[in-house]
Image (tube, rainbow, N blue to C red; front, side, top):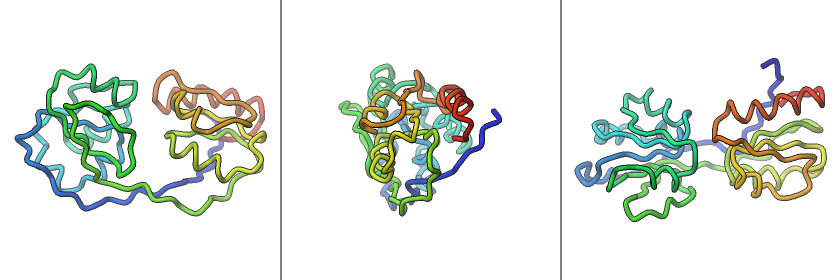
Length: 195
């Protein structure tokens, strides 16, 4: 898109040891994060025969790359996607800290932790893309001059988590990087700086 990215990770993904539950207790896998697919490791093999319900296309792509069959991909949050799922027993492989799905059909098992990194070096101003509520809160805690930043959030809830005081805040209408970049591009162009 002709934008200049400034990569400033706030977390690092660390796989966690986990004990896979009995595969016959479930009729589908639920992934709300591509990181869970990548971090599940060898334990994922026991569930390779189960269909996958994924939140977001990036998560679905990670599951496909792991050799899993996608049954359903949703563009909303985990609760909305599960509400539309036809399965009665879903195994949610997730991060240690994740938004609860709050559905009795779902059993969540953490397979990774997103560990906080030291504050990154940031440009004086810019357009920040925020992919989670935790990232929004972390970014807000390290930026001292909020009025120098435009925020593009993956959802309205993530935008709310960033708090007030930013130059502008917009939220994607779908939880996809393409939707976020479509919002970020004109902000970058009008300010003549990168993302």
